[in-house]
Amino acid sequence: MMHTSQPVDIHIVCDGEAERTLRARLDLVTRPRYRTRVRFYKPSFQKMLERIEREGTLQTDHSAGIRKFYPLPPLKVSQSFLSQLV
Image 1: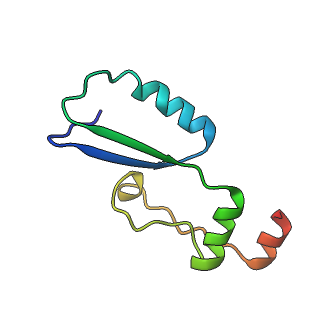
Image 2: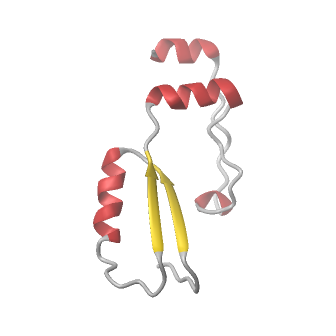
Image 3: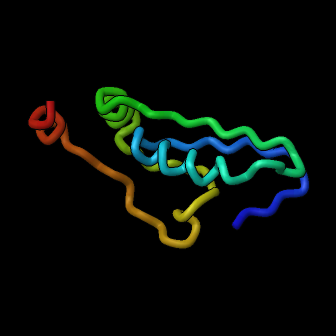
């Protein structure tokens, strides 16, 4: 459940299957009191690899979401592991 007292923008990084599932749930909200805009980002596998190469991790420092309660270690991936995937 989510409550807000102002317009809200939600940014979600996910795959196509997760987007379909989330859209089905969001479609149940027919008359929100405030403007709600949801944007889905579906990075390709190559884009994720490029980010790991550039930043060394896929971890975010954004304070929203489950990381606040259950911190996960950053995804550190060696160059040899990445070369096996491609």
